[in-house]
Length: 131
Image (cartoon, rainbow, N blue to C red; front, side):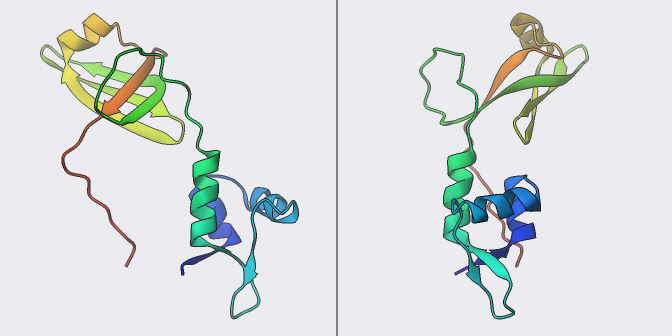
């Protein structure tokens, strides 16, 4: 089973090493010792904690849709030309970039600071590992 050192666990969860140590001290995250005597967190425990921490804002839209990947966030950049536009949304720790028509940007009144939901439905999702 994969194990993560405290610093690696903190990096993956986007928190400080001290935060992970506090979770360990409060027994919210169980640890073990590796072969060198260092504290490590089991991969499945870290994954469960990551899911528990993930709390996206509620999706303000009331539209039914088949796409399950929704990223609620704030528009941080809009670049438009005559035909196409690039819109960047910061959704928690995720930066989502969308290319859409300039007409759609105008119709949705997308501008820096707007609340937006990036809805992703992909037929191809690439998964990589560091090996």
